[in-house]
Amino acid sequence: YPVDGRSLLDSWTRERLLIEYRRYGHFKAPTWRSIRTKTSQYVEYYRNGLIVFREYYALRRDPWQNRNLLRDGTHANDPNVRKLHRRLRADAACTGSSCP
Image (cartoon, rainbow, N blue to C red; front, side, top):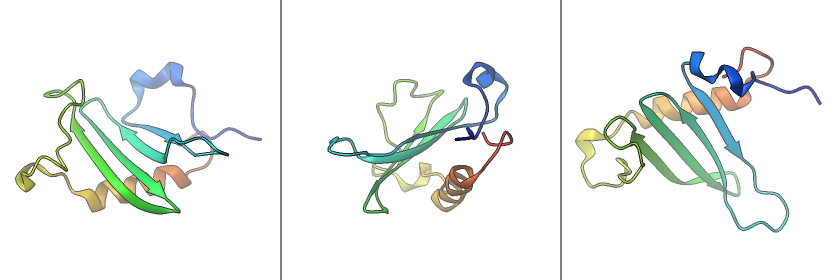
């Protein structure tokens, strides 16, 4: 099969990186997708094709990803989830070498 995206060896030149895991067979880990930039990481977890959980980390302040800003009880620091979801969906549907 043709591979979408580019080599991870050029990851330092990217604006963002799409990371995915699809559950196969009897593995217990959930399906998820993520967008990683130099300053943040956004993750969506899925069950039966529906989003069941989201995470967002500000990596400069929290490089070890200890504080999920979407679950910290402070809505003032929440990112624009709709925009992030649209970007993640578009990146996941991308084909060819122009993909992140």
